[in-house]
Length: 358
Image (cartoon, rainbow, N blue to C red; front, side, top):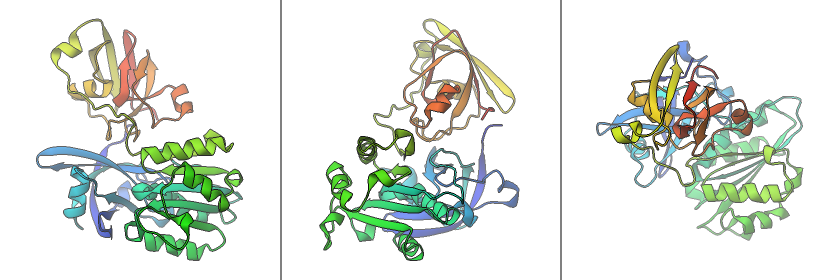
């Protein structure tokens, strides 16, 4: 069956930095199995702010080994949900939350002797922190190096927790802070995570020695690191990255009758929770299959509508679609017939999409 929102009570709201709070949820015993998660996965949440439904997705920063469900929400300029969370959310409030989703992880094995590398900037630390904690506890013979970019020491989210991990795993966790607006005695710790800094870090980091790499943060940094590591000979399948926004993200549009009904059409069938929603959608329409289905009353899972969070992933059973972007999908998933409904447009006279097949 597809995933759905569940009302969850907030257990704790903690101020991590001047512009970031962590939010911990209480998970009822009846839902704990549904909310089991892997390190690096995320939660999509929904609430109403100023009479407007708002959905956002945030990475889980706790480890599944902690039996805790915690996200960090950094306030962004003009961010409706992030501003609300930082100024108004409190213990006892209720948010609607979906089960965890995401592929930003690798399977761990206590027998592994691996060397992991992480790059994060700002709130990009949230999934990476979960990955680090889980990896170091699950694989006692593996090590982890984190390069973490921030403006200054006061803006470092989870500063104390990271320092604690460094002290606990002296020989297995290497933390390299890069500060863009605060100089330290070591010049290598000043600047931004860009090609020049990555090259300079070769004094401390042997890139070729790493088995897996995880990258999360601003788009520019992610692709800079990805290209640099690939140029160093690291297999691109070993470089895992998590985007918070899509490059050139295309806003979902609200259709007009003319835009959905004009020209040749495709007969769309969307299956969810054992029910089927059937409708026609123009083959030339800019309206996505997700938006068209929502207009038909289908209660489909979605969050970012940017091709990133993967909440609207479904299986294409019949026909063909084109996707604007598909950052949230692995190549193997695309080959297996999975699509992101928020980015999909019909290309054939009939299209069948199933949200119940995962």
